[in-house]
Length: 180
Image (cartoon, rainbow, N blue to C red; front, side, top):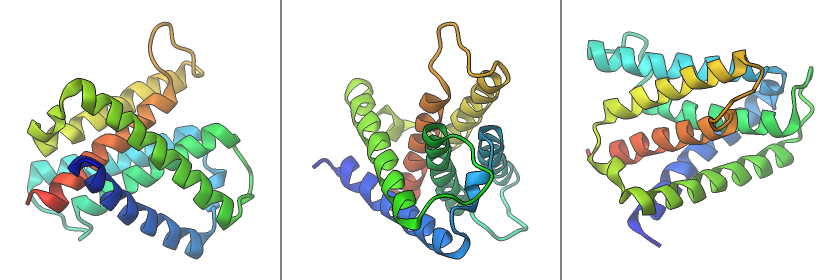
């Protein structure tokens, strides 16, 4: 296993632990979120990261790392919502939610491995602020697709954008965990 694979697994475990703890605290209350609301939650997190990067300080106290973890977890929530559809209640057992979480984090890792092969891990040479900008770009693309009722002429769908947001957030976490 490459260093990147191990680092991905490390940060994915951190994100998964947070997801599981919040699942115990709140259940799958996020099941009531429409996909547009999930996208907006990711927007709030990415926009806050950009604000902290620009201002150089956070008055709330939550750090960029926590926001990146939230982007990973909301991205996976979005993918789960795409698969299961919207719900008006918490209709997902903890066991099933964790099973779906693991499924989608593994799919994100597989996509990362494929892209890393083709791009020679160019993300390692990027500045962390670029991950933020790329996540924000993916959010704007996703909002446009959502506004078009999911229809695209040539582009990938909402799910592909969620995967990319997850992976950019993972890259940011890897950089903060291993390269600082």
